[in-house]
Image (cartoon, rainbow, N blue to C red):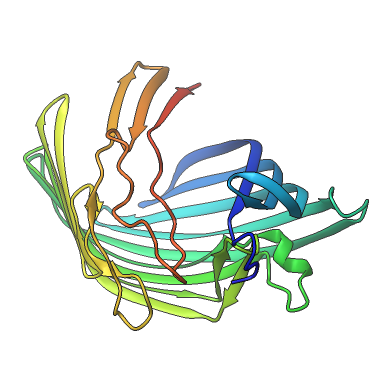
Length: 318
């Protein structure tokens, strides 16, 4: 497409170190028959990213296209108030304010540093009715509405047609959930999600292309049954396809002529919880499947996670 002599092979390098923290404080109080449950908190995450893109031939470097160091800090503060005027009714009102700050160093092309930032406030509200609450059966009916965001590649903020680092999302959901016999969970929901914009990764250029706003809506069903205290089974069904630790066949092109085959992925979770700490081991893609689609000409795709193991430890101070 771009180089008839050497071909269009590219090599992408993405090395990153990230860390963060989250803290919250919760207090409950009663004012007459009304219960107030207040949670306030903050979280922060720092990412240091080194990104390179090379034109290559037979895995040998020919020319450097991008060589960037990206530094990002995303922090937010939040508050949520749960009000229960009567035992079977709960109202949640909350919001969070987020700030992203970033700097981009062009390592390969000079000493230029681009600096920027963005902020957003995201409100939310939800209403929960519990018409049935017994030891062997509990039923909740709920409605949610709230704002959120997805973060874009911050390098897009300095393109000729700049992209907002934080793209607003507006979502709503109505549904029900039940807990039966102390071990069976069932849930059903109708949802809608509006995104201010979406970005698509362009691997050959090493950057993102911006699409316009999108609207998604659908129906989702899920169930979980605890067979024993250490073994459980899950099943999810969505309008966009059927998933049982996987995803069904889906279009690989806008016109639907190309179909990416479905695949099944197995994950493993093992954990132990004590009164004041817990540890867990999560393994994604246990059998290292390839995601069911290898791509083709003019169709970009995101490969599946390779075999990935993650260890998590949590300490409780209360």
